[in-house]
Amino acid sequence: MNRIKLLAVAAMTALFAVGIASARPSLPEGPVSFKLTAMQQMPNVVASKTNTTSGATNITTTTKYIITSTSIVNNDILQLLANSFTNLPASITSEQLMTDGGGAFFVVTPTTTNYVGNVLRISITSTVISGTQTTVNKNPPGTFSFTESATFTQVATLTYDDSALTTRDGSNTSITLHGLLVTKFKDPNSTSTSKFTLTGSGDGNIQGASTVIKGVVTGSTSTGN
Image (cartoon, rainbow, N blue to C red):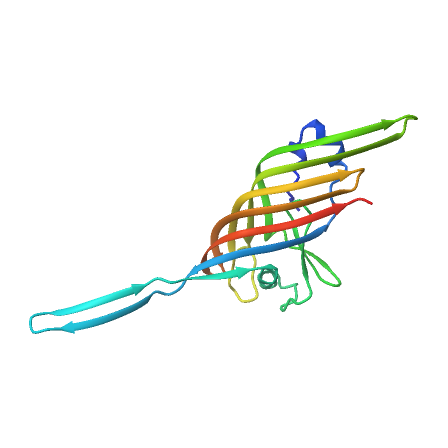
């Protein structure tokens, strides 16, 4: 499974290497929340009126273009995933979307954890980092503590693409959401927490319908004692 770390461990300076490298989350870690809006073009409405006079026939045609806006939240993503993955329940009622903090997503049922990162994933292209790290070495040797905090601002793309799968209803979904991903990370003495927010817009198709999409995806992870 290819997972691109939202915390961008490989890109970090030595200042953060000791603490964050030791705080990589296990799988899965925390809940994720989707709050998106999908805009789709409805069929055009055409009205025509004919006016005939003694000298001419006038035909007036009016075309009305309509866009519908639909909210996409976790339940909607879960229903899309249930259509993409036939091993998931066809009617999802008690499942939860989870993230490992590293670009991968899971559907957690009461009895199973299902990896869906080959369809739903986040990728990173650029990162800038700000933060601090404080370490304390106490005498006698062997007692060591540290605290650190960092904010990662990254260019990210959220992708949902099941075009390689045979879905339940035969339709496929392929959308991308481009934007800025901001991750706030804290790690006091090997107990780490992180919260991320991806805000962006994009396009694609949802079950065959051309779609423009915008919104926010948020999530959190935690590890340690």
